[in-house]
Length: 147
Image 1: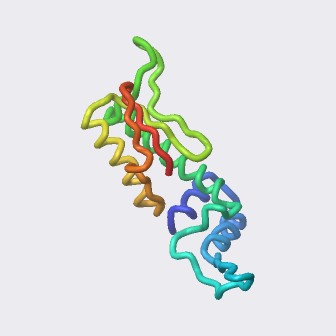
Image 2: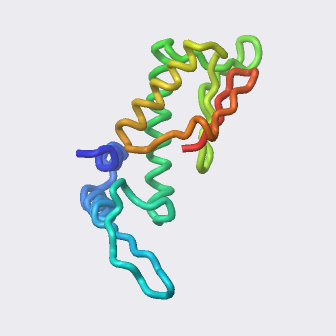
């Protein structure tokens, strides 16, 4: 079983719906209009196209899985979240429609911990993070990036 199927089953979707979604993911094909004529169909080598109607839903499930990994890392003490005020609420991450902000103490060890969480999530899902394009460290210990 792959990442998508595991994730869909973990959120307790009915098995028939999981099978239908997996069929859509595994059997998709693309063709390009060239001078008004469609090219021969080709099969994507990784997952589904970003503009596929299923893409946003699967991405939210990915963010949920990544969030669970971050919470686990915070609970073990490896990830030191940003604290809002003295003795205030701890914030480790915020999820948005198409990106996520990560908060941690501003030091090299925390950067390593963050990268470990991202690497584990990306390895299991097949997604990639472009740190070079989206990495913006802030003085507060915040990383802002898009997947």
